[in-house]
Image (cartoon, rainbow, N blue to C red; front, side, top):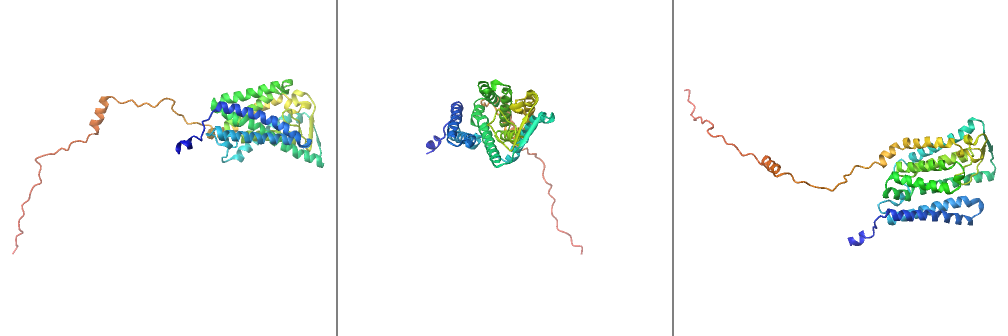
Length: 335
């Protein structure tokens, strides 16, 4: 029956589904924190981030499949399958790599950066666990900032209002959290702006995920710096910086310096330049008429003129013209 077939597709309700996805986000993070206590301490951070990522992906996938039929379930999570994913991810990693190097550069050039190396077994194991933690944490952040909630906001309003609302929520969370105790508030706002803008320009999380992975892995694993925004990590390299906090970040890490604000502003400009092609291919919408279709009949004089021109022209016969008849005569015998 056609009626029964169409009744299975429920209409999309962006506002209600957005509230449900927001509630699921909070529930997933709380559940991941509680479940991670059941594992040994060494695996707590890995378990927390992996469980949170799995809960977010599973919940958003189910919501999109049931209540948002116009969105593909994987696309609703941000995992859009299309050509050139490796290049898109690579551009994000390159930008994140540049951010990390720019943050460490002031302490390195002023001679205030000190490093310690360790290559024993426990250090190598903690380095591997730190890499897994940062990858899972980046996935959780991108699922929250560039997943189903943001896409539903875009559908319900516009990309501009959706990004403003997401950044406002991040700001409120930063003010109520530990960020209000220092200068980390503008860093969180700018970082969220980079991730949200990267998603809205590409309509996938590959670029933003690459930015966060390149940023955190290079800064914390390759340079061994600490960060107040990610889980505590350990690696074969541990570094610290002396000098003025506004320049190097001191014991809080390079992300606590005022230089970070300038670097992230430049990185936000870089997002627009690096995603120019993606924005053209994936965000351009053809113009559509907004009015109601209306056919205005032409005046009667126009109709009569069109009928007169469309009528076949009459045949004209010219009389009095005939082909002359030449009489036939027998040829004469010359004999």
